[in-house]
Every structure is written in C-alpha cells, then in structure tokens.
Image: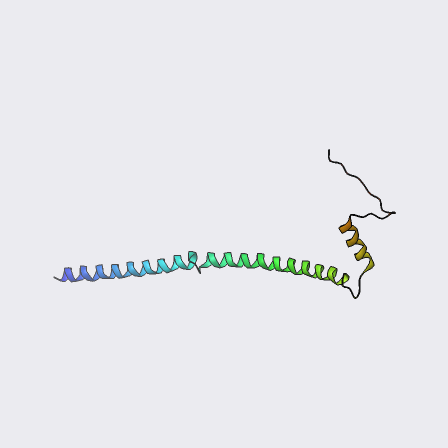
Length: 105
C-alpha cells in the first residue's frame, strides 16, 4: 500500500515535470520560429533596412527631378535647359555640334 502511494506520487511528479517541460519547449520554439518570433523580427529588420535605403535613394531622385522642373518653370526658364530639351524632343543638332555616327557591327 505504501509502495503504491509512493509510486503514484513519483509518477504524478514525473508527468507534471514532463508536461511543464513540453509547455516550456512549445513556447520556446514559438518564440524563435513563430509569426512574431526572433526569425520574423530579423526578417522585418532586414526589410526595414532595405526600404530605408530605397527611400533615401528615391528622395534623392525626387530632389533631382524637382531641380530640373524648377529650371523649366515659365517664370524663370534656364536657356541651357530649354535648349537641351528642345534638341532632345526635335532631334535637332546645332551647327557647331559634333555628331558621331555609331554603326552596329
């Protein structure tokens, strides 16, 4: 009778420890690989870094285009910019321009 009670208490303790270990293991694995785990956080950090560099590049490109547009405004047209755009749109070359004809091989 005493041996049976002791066996039952030992078995109960082992089962409880095993359940606790399984729960800790489950939460530990999810903390590492889950939707909001460490791997997901690392992936989000990498994506944030890539998007930040893209934003910086796009802001620089936008500033460049804003400078070019400002030169073409009607109240203060830059003569060089106007000449460049007219030649590009009309395929025109000035009398003092040097033209190189490149033929494919």
